[in-house]
Image 1 (tube, rainbow, N blue to C red):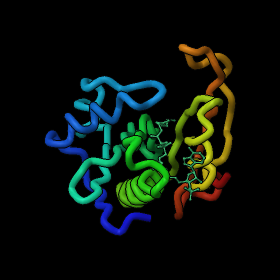
Image 2 (cartoon, rainbow, N blue to C red):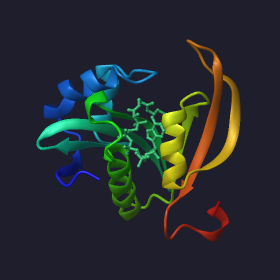
Image 3 (cartoon, protein in one colour):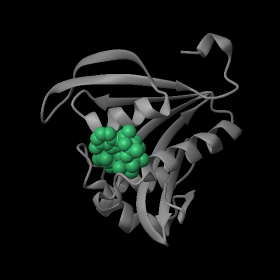
Image 4 (cartoon, rainbow, N blue to C red):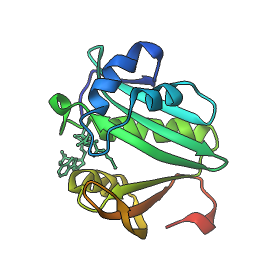
Length: 156
Ligand SMILES: CC(C)(COP(=O)(O)OP(=O)(O)OC[C@H]1O[C@@H](n2cnc3c(N)ncnc32)[C@H](O)[C@@H]1OP(=O)(O)O)[C@@H](O)C(=O)NCCC(=O)NCCS
């Protein structure tokens, strides 16, 4: 895990770097999506800074008790150094202090790297969504993670 990684809320100053990194995802986000995530309200977004450089970002849509991980992308130059793991673990801890009890997300069935990351973080498979994705068409996997202190009924 990188020593010099700092996890902070996404700010306007990070938007250009995040937009560049977002383009590296299988389902790239537009800058408008990032601006909405940065805007606050029901969205929460975090960036990982490596020696002051944006190495990755994660965006959530929050509803009472739940946070949907809508996008997480790490710059190709920074991958496989624990950036996503540290970014998400820090984000989850922060969201838990704000009342989030579980994290939900959906991933392409072929996104083996992301699925390995989520499995490592403790996510469990909740459901399949057949033909959910396009370009190419493929199934989506719905995953969930109950955060510490969650109601017993939500343990999975
Ligand atoms: C998925 C992604 C965010 C992972 O970022 P990362 O910073 O490289 O991940 P980490 O280094 O924190 O990986 C933590 C663990 O996850 C697993 N993992 C991550 N990427 C993996 C890959 N490509 N292949 C296999 N396992 C992988 C490994 O267990 C890894 O631990 P290890 O390196 O000690 O073996 C990054 O590959 C990415 O941005 N991909 C494109 C965007 C994307 O697909 N986002 C998810 C949409 S659902």
